Length: 155
Image: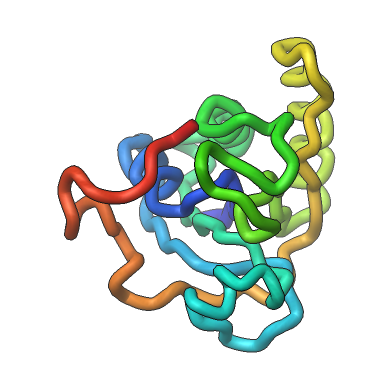
């Protein structure tokens, strides 16, 4: 198994989209890339923790490639928006790929270059090594399964 971590705005919608992909063994929403230890949702929403809302994916690379997961990442949000997705504004909604290996860094950079041709504006997505990941509170996990018809919309 491998781990992939993506920030693409509201984590509820991103998690729901990846849950449908064959080869995804586990999804978990959380916070990454910030400086606050074990932040709460309320703290992350202030924009003061440095964390982004993320989805962590445990996947089987024999069934689904990291590149396929990246291709869906670009489709799920507008990577040309800085710190904003739809009505959600703030650094916690930034577009960022958190990598867990040198191979992921290389693949993510190449994939971003290729994807840029699909956009008229520059992609602002950061690619960073995964740091300070913390799982979100239980009520956020698989939010749409628990709350049908509620929550964020993908842009």
